[in-house]
Image (cartoon, rainbow, N blue to C red; front, side, top):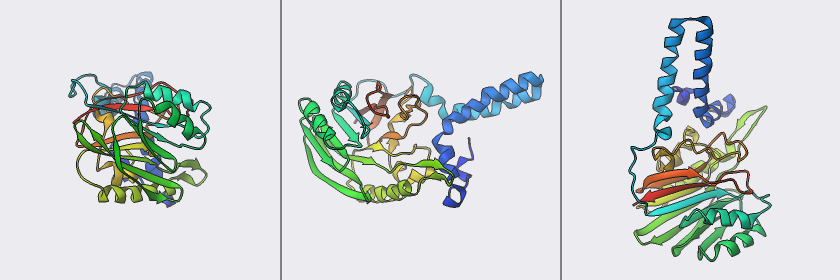
Length: 289
């Protein structure tokens, strides 16, 4: 739990570090197993020793599960991000579901034609401003300007736009990093990591001030391979009581690979939304300037 940053992370090690860090919260399952073994052996020393990993896991993840203690109060902005799945059988229903969240900014990833048209038609009434670049898009109740896209790897773009909110301009990035796979060669993260480095360069060159980074990163904020991106922002999941917010796979979520990251904004709350026709769950966050 504590030394995961020292696990070998190179391709020669099958990117073992990223694999462990993707599922790091699940290390807590070792605690009840160890306790059961200690009780079966009727060993007081072993029972006492189980307290150590329990405390470490609590320190790492207790705040995410504990209610209260956060900033509380009203929020100024609600945002949603959702990988809608290129094989989604009901794009219009998915659009209605994310719009029902009340979010002023909605980022969608894995857009394809003709499904993009369904999202544009369904979201148009509530979110009249939108921009789509490649397979990522942003819908907004606020005017959008300075919209452009930067390539991170072939067939992958990061969209950047400025949303003019009543509290001032916010820079919004929408990204979808390449997928990873677990196979005989280990955890194949090469294309994703390359895209993450390129995305970090885009972020460094971007403007200052309040910013949002939304999308499917195919990795968690624990994954040090994404540190160039995640270290520049705060995860909305840091809001106390937000839970783990696992978003994938939708049928039985085991990892939060979809992210809402903020800069110069305070997360008030974060949550997953009900399942849509996608293999990911949408995630939402309420924020304060």
